[in-house]
Length: 124
Image 1: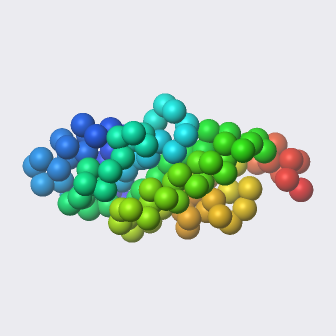
Image 2: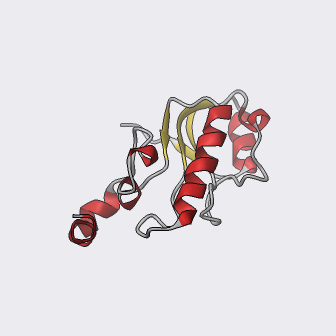
């Protein structure tokens, strides 16, 4: 498996595109407010010409029953309809627990592997 760039800012997107780019992943800030391209920076034009593999985000309150999760799901869903990526990922391990709407076919599972006991007690 080869390493791929994960682009987190409009500047990184521009730098990646300038020499011709290549396959990459893009992180959107759907509400975590510390990582990814924010809604105020988002535009379909920004991503034009990128060879996307994974469009991703991260839930800020995945292990909590929070309204923020549904707001992030909505924002990520709306944004992901405007650009083309081979795969999409919103949920880490805890983020898959609220239901299939959060799965998007690819999840970041490392946390559940490490803290499986905690989640097993909470959701069973």
